[in-house]
Image (cartoon, rainbow, N blue to C red):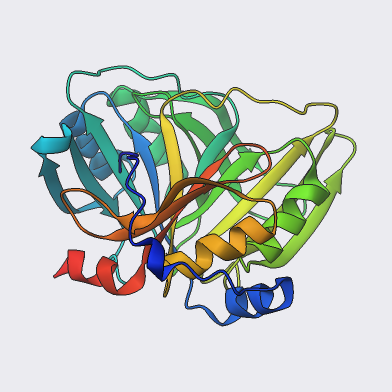
Length: 293
């Protein structure tokens, strides 16, 4: 999705929200994580890599020539019930800086097999497989051909194989407060790892074992990260982008794109920045389902 200056129908904006009513709205709104959006230099190459190495399925493609970009949506199940990745190819751009502050988490049935495929298909292993202390979970870290990092963990079956996006933040308590209040997420877990000098929390809209989640990591003493220009945002469903935008403003979120319909698609969205500058987009639930028809 590309940003525009479209303000949308300002008359639909709701300026009567208080902090209490905004908190209530965020909790009752039908929200779920829809997809992670990022830019790639070769759409077909990345589709091939994800389907062959990670076992994803190509769910749909679309071309928006008037806006000079194309999208592909991939995942492990239908978009109306699963978290997916939305790959964006901007005409004429074949390379991006992916930054150093995020990665994605995927469960595969055989980590060793996935690692061999990654090596054979143009990816890179950045951390060899390890057995986590205290359990039998095997994980490894790899990069796709564009340099995006993936944590691969091994499990026989899981309802949501594409299970998390991890963002690095400069102040963990500040970020927790923002995502709980402005996004209506629940704090699912919190852990401190002083031996490795980092703390991490998990937030989301349902239990971690059955839903995609957002993980936030604070590395001791690090307050700023290179976000690059490749990663775009997480998309989240909402029943009302106008009301959601007003609620986000109440909790000091920055609206990066005023609510309104996207050119060429007409799906209503609004975009915002968290305290660290990570962007998220809220997408109208009804319009999103129309896209899938």
